[in-house]
Amino acid sequence: MKKLALLCTVAAVAATGVVAAGTASAGSAKFDPGKAGDQTLTVWTSESAGRLAMVKALGTSFTKKYPNIKINWVVRDFGSYPAQLKLALSSNKSPDVAIGNIGWSLDGPLIKNNLIRPLTPWVKQYGWDKRYQKNELDQLKFTTDGKVFGAGAMYGVPYAADVIGWFYNIAALKKLGVGVPKTFAELQADFAKAKAAGLVPIQLGNKDQWPALHLFFNINDTTQPASQVTGLVYNKRGVKWTDSSFASSATLMAKWYKDGYIPSGTNGVAYGDATAAFGKGTGLFLPAGSWVASGLPANKFGFFLTPPVKAGDKPRATGSFGYGWHIATRSDKADLAAAFIDWETNAASARLFFEGGDIAPLQVPNVKLKPGKLTADIYNAFQSVLKNDTLLPYLDFSDPNGGEVTYPTFQRILVGNQSPADGLKTIESAREKFVDSLK
Image 1 (cartoon, rainbow, N blue to C red):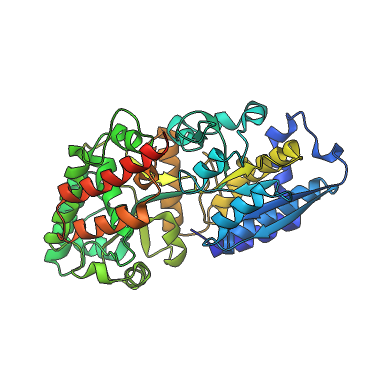
Image 2 (cartoon, one colour):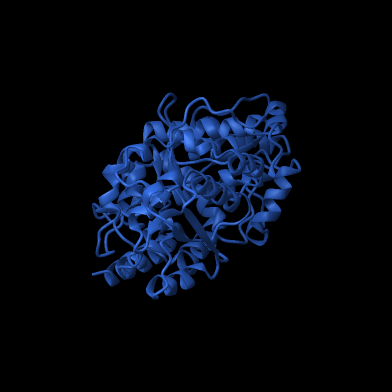
């Protein structure tokens, strides 16, 4: 999800402090960082590359506006970040601000152990609860006991985002004599046409196991009720992985493989290798997240969300707001931390992310996008799901056992080594065990 294309924009932010002109919410806040005296704010992050450069540049513009404030950045590798952050937040030298990770993998344990604060005192002050539609806002909520995800208090404020859809080869689609599919039936018809023409319909490398789940999202979000996704993720309405809706989607995914729409041996091909092959022209479609765009020529490829079953309906798509900024429970600079978080996440910062080729979790019109059809496609697709409130959470947010259970099970289901019924039963059993542990 890291985009080096942001670096030029980053340099402009650091040099001009352009964000200062766009902090309308900060202007209405009761706390004024400029009157706080000399302060040092310690901020932890596991970001890298373009996004790290962007958040740091936004921090530089913050300290340019408020020269009495200094920021002590602590950057840790993502792999070791969760464990190190938990220790740091528990110590007498706790950071003031830190990114987390949506759902049970990191935010849940931090909340359960009272290491980060509910943002209730600042939500109304900065209007954070008005920035996002309901489905998106739910991704940022937990009950204060850390037991219920998707309800309760807002704990994090996000600055960047992602969405799952379909990349396509413009020249290959034109060669087939078809346009971007407008219905799910048209999409499947294009698979058949591509196969008949000797093209790889769906490029996919699933050695890493999780890419198959992205393919599943594209099917399930469109063909099944959205309430099934939110019900499973937030453990509501008795929704289970074993429900017929999920079984139907998994069955269709396996059928696509059996029909030859996905390369045989996909489970032995690395995600990165398949993506690189697609970039070199092998494959008509690639089901993947928006972050893949940074490695593709912007004028040779396009992007679309899975088209609806019925023409004209609003498309739904899986996506997230990634990492949210949190305020540490042990911080004695909570008001300053909130002001910093608002600066990093407001409409002006979101505009800079879009202009740099990334996407942010806010509706921002009239953005001066980087040249290229692909950039415009992703921006327009993401703005549409934000506007229509049709962005759905990742199904693997439903429990933290994806790497051990969900991903390898979907790998087997995809190629027919395990039936959808048996595989989903295995996944549901792991989910229920996790849910029971929260009681």
